[in-house]
Image 1: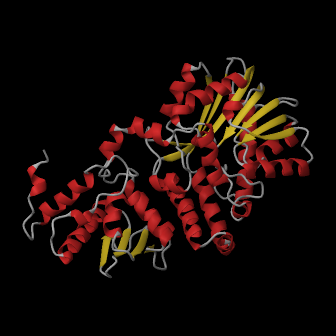
Image 2: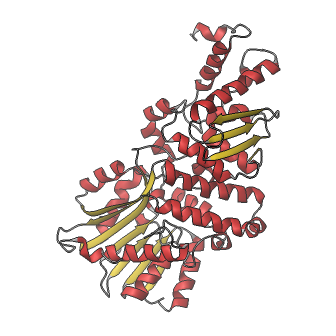
Length: 455
């Protein structure tokens, strides 16, 4: 039987009781950010609409006031009423304007999803002189030590189930997820990537490098960790547009097999290998990592682990071990999180990387240990991806009109939200990149890391 509270209407003017009822209604039947439709605020007691609207806006304002302690934010609601939060004149600063009254409750229930959706739809705008990057900076810098979300305890309780459902990526589903993102027009990626089309974290020695230099330095950094010798056989899992594989063949005289799930990647990679004159040394295949049967001296995987899913880690790393020669070396480069196991941001999972997840090291090492790998090196790249994303976003904005011609304005807003939101994740919210070097043999590499120096 339901608690008697649900059958009692609060007295007019009893704000605390009414807000409590809203919060309890929010919690009813919610098992995560994507389970069905959000609870209906319209099912509240039949108070006059003006009174309900006023209290709902007060709840939104109260929530923002609890969150914004650093910087300054101004909000104009869908009825033209203004609010301010934080400290005037402080940084970062931003403003947002709501154009749809439903956002008053959507942002309370699941702001992580609806903020991005509203910006895509144009029902949330950022008035000049501010940008969506400014708005995301205000929210992100305040979320570092901000309030826990309404459903955070519930999410933590059901985390293993959520991970298994959200990150279940068998072969067919993995290919579908890959195609949904990586088979977008090649012209789109040309608008913002470097000349070698590296769609992963660059490497910055000083932070002043342009994107072309930083991506070239990333490739050299990876190659140094592989300790390559001419004639070696190399497997590139998730080979992208082939830039790394082609460079390794040209510079180190190795033979590379690249595997991908993207038709766009496959076609362009093969074309680039022919143009570079290395098509005899470099071959690309449309192949899931689980289908690979070759034996290799070196295996490299850049930006692929994020698409594997925690339930499949044992299969992924076992396949690496099976394919490595006894003296082989593997390098896995991936986005990761510093705060332990979690789930993927709901907006990012829905619109950008379905099935994707940035793991914690604590989710990887138990698998690696059980398979008796030697972890011969771990490097954490902290702000490198933030710098990469900032440069990508600037290049995208410069050629935004071309992107709109390829797709539409809604797509452009989605893409800029994606780039800026991810930048903020790396700057403020505990997201990083790690590189893990693995061997099967204790003698596979030199005693010290001197061979990596100078990369």
